[in-house]
Length: 412
Image (cartoon, rainbow, N blue to C red; front, side, top):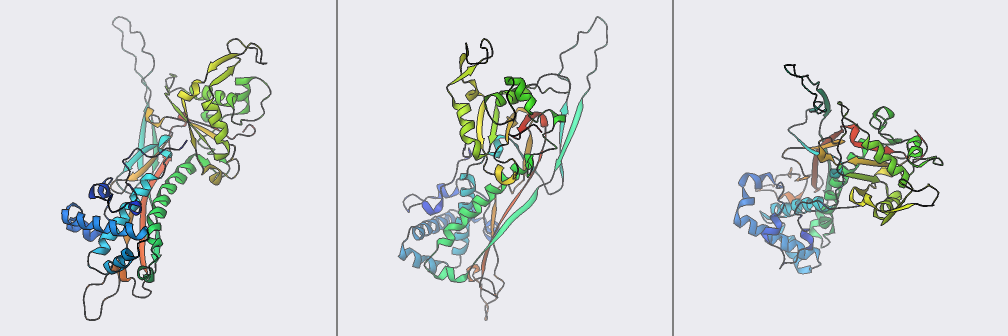
């Protein structure tokens, strides 16, 4: 089940008509400005700069929509002193818009974190002290409770890409390359996050064997499915019985005091190959249940409303069969809501750099006779104009009590 981010997303600049563009829409969801010169001058808060940015966005939108006159005006404007910064700002905001518009799923099963720098950060957990209170006899000492602490570590890393453009592209009428940059870089940043989150809990050989293990009681086995539905089951393939077994296994998790862990909602993560099966299970109107009166053979079964639809949300992760080349089309996962205080994983971002950032290479040429060099004139050796996107993130698995995995085949 796909969903979009709850952020107030920014429309793509290339789809704006002149009558629709405004400084409010351009600056909604405002990200980091592309140009250091613009930031130093404080132009993004300047009404005159905003008006010029609006005009640049309108002109760019007309070019993308096929206006030949606008294309000629665009070429001429690219040689003026400020337009390259305006155009860079437009592209920067478009990339942020595409990044925000692309559906994000990892934040439903992982906690979002923020880190100060590239050094390893530690996440400490505390367990214990929540057991049922003991009776205290008259003038007796209160019993002490033991606390158990845990520690998880990770460091964010820098990811990015360069996109070189030929100077001739600016001269030609065909500007599809510019229209393509924000979409590609925005999508690349979001896809990178999704793939990274997937590699935390899935490997090339199936569910992460360190996190999902019999010792953690969070790896579904055929014996668990048999116990939930009787004999006849030989795999952990996704079906009503194996889903019931996963619920039972997740609900059986206890804290260090032996107390139950309360889980209000779960997310069922499946590959595209199991999308139909998962949605049929969750969206069925009724469940035929032998438990509580039936004999398990079809006679005297109970018809109950499908309560799963109120407890389970399906997430279809297309990265699973790409990351897991062994059981990527059969393995499935169940994660507790990460906001309950026991997240299964955390994805962290560098403070102040939590969205992808776009940069343009400063020209390394000097005009004979002096004068400023337009950044759109390109590199001295090749006239190449280069753009760079940077994105910083990292993460780690955390509490194994908040997840269940099944390889969907035979017992592990």
